[in-house]
Length: 290
Figure: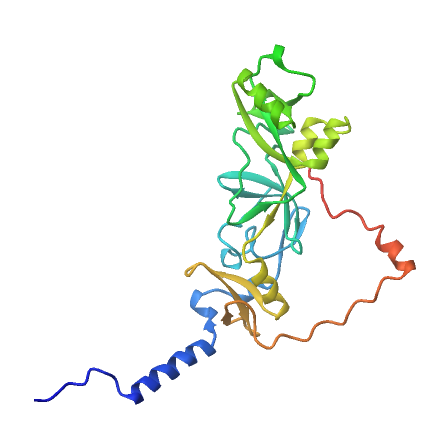
């Protein structure tokens, strides 16, 4: 009686191991996505926003240059982004931080704030609030006899028609007043803007118009490592994963960064007393679209 050997020979095992190790050593081909590397090497712009790059795309920048959830629309020269079915105006973008300053939409035709009808919520897998924000409450159709002096009036547009709402930055006060109103909406505002309303240096519309800050957290660490190594940050829409496009033609895809990163640029000269004063006079990087 003969026994059949079900175990592979040592030679076969060795060949399989070698093939597996080689598959780990060589990068994937970015060409499998049928995408043009050159289209993603340059940034794009919309209105006053310049040097927009990954994870954002849109306004002529192909979809494969960014993350699916970070499409920017350029409407009348105003950049907008949709987050959890809510459209926001992008006031400022800072890639190094990385922070977006966004605001609820503005009715350009009537030159007024669109009345927020839902709470401000973020996709926690993509964004997180900064510590520069605070909550405020908008109260609609309230009994005017029960509105204390701490409330402010907001004129906004609803379905193309003007409507008034009561604006409150004190959460406890807002909770007490909610029962005297038809409905309420919680929005995020900058804490400095809320303080400006309290000391009467800003109007209610200005507070909402200044927006609030969120930090985008998708692929941030990987993208910085990719850029430092000389690569271009990309997203594989088939596998739903970040990759770093490397090589002169960008046809080599690595999970995080390119091998053999280039030499770092020479260090910038240290600030002296004379050029420090000049640097401190640089204008603020925040842009006001209101």
